[in-house]
Image 1: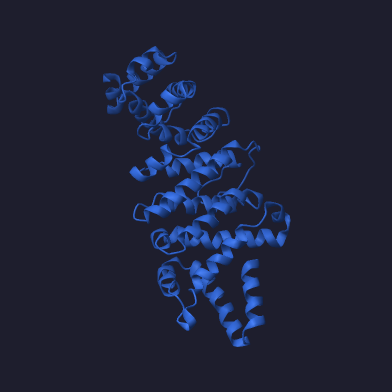
Image 2: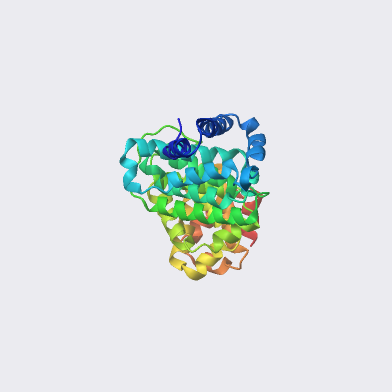
Length: 330
């Protein structure tokens, strides 16, 4: 089903062009929707349709379509209560999300890639007003672009900025979780819990660009505080926190800028190491502690109120985990 913007394009074409031209425009939308459902053919479709039209030097059809899709996603939140508007929003999110999910590098290299990210950012911020699947689909697409190292750096940076901004807002929401179907591998029942899911994926394997954008993001400190709250008090995904703390210089930076927050984070790590029977969490938590110790924080860690349970947990883990032994040696 096409979106409202697509319908607008059709009606305008019908009014100003011969019927044959209007039919051609409709076919172009049908071609796009068909290509989006056939990922193996999507690259060829994008390559063919991303070129400027020869007739009068008009911009390429794909750019026109993207402009209309993004316009649909920039709708006022209040209008999403209207069924037709919500359906159009859903369709536009699907279209842009499919483009980015299956061809992140190619999309990032297009002249209008920035516009695509703007559209997905709108879907990320407003999607929960339509359906949890809409928001998660947008988060999935942005995550794929954020971690796609071959993608154009400027577009990746913009996607990372928008992703962190959007998830920071999700973490602040207080809605109670509902029983929801899984979408893109996430079955979290509210925005705050879902944010921890996507942060884990975003930080699963970071590179220098992602780490730098994360450390310099203006929302980093409130994001850390809200993430710790959601993980420790609302049963959020603990791997989101451990992987955030593993980012080089981030944990030590918290010690300097927000010592109380860093202290609470260290308490959570000690608690998790003692209580969670999960080898993957143990490894992640130990890596987070190592990231702190390697910055010369051993004295302050030993003076911390959680030092004894932390040392006990590290001693136990050192029997089977080399990184735990490394932490004790530091």
